[in-house]
Image (cartoon, rainbow, N blue to C red; front, side, top):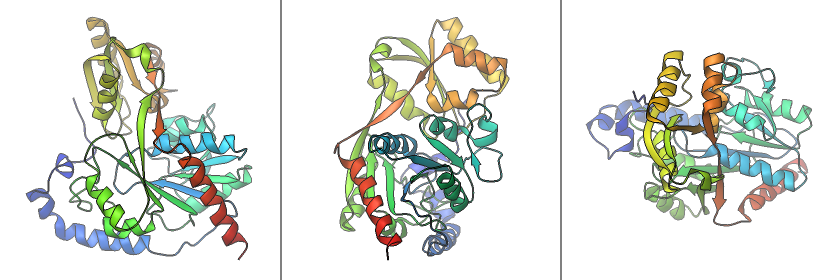
Length: 342
């Protein structure tokens, strides 16, 4: 069974469904835009980089954050990651402890991010940033939060999926946009398009008209050679499972079976049993995303069995401009220096 977090008409040319909800979308968009335009209420004395997107759902934020962390560490910085912690139960700013927390506590993405750098989960972004600074971090990298005005951001990088783009271009609930694109673009320092496809053509045109820089990046699978010719059963509970399945096909894997679930999906025991049984009956190797594996950890014997039977697929970004990530960090550092010395 395929579950979807967003309605299919969001990703199609505007039809009657989009226009039906358009009055509500207009009101929602105006309220959201006014909130986004508010001046920040709090600052921290270290650079803050926000990796966000224009729409609800995934666009490549997590691999972008990890790329920033990797380069920041090479620059001898001490980066910390600030996450909303979607799907987790903690209610106060919390430093993720991989020995203590599971996805029910802090969500799945923070567990993945915490492997790379100190990670704080906090609905209150300023409180989370302060906790990272107290923990010794001298660079805060926000995973999402572009539309949240509370914490001052020194650099905003908006990522866009090349295939999905901004969908039908409508604001929620008529479409996937969180705020009208005309109100979001001015607040982005750079727009980065990830992957291949023409779904982001509209965003690219609008970005060019607004004189904002555009960067390109592609997703690559780590150790992709091991997958070529292998008969696989792939399962994923992410915003766009088909994107994951397509990436496996692109490296020569034979994806015989697919199981797609909604973003941040918590696997039930019967679903896990079905996945394991189908793979065994058809003689298929199980594969899934690093985020799914993080979500399964610490949830019991059956989940652990699925982890042990699954080949975890890790991805990374290949940037068209190899100096881009370092330039983003340098820009954020310069911006923070100027505001702290004015």
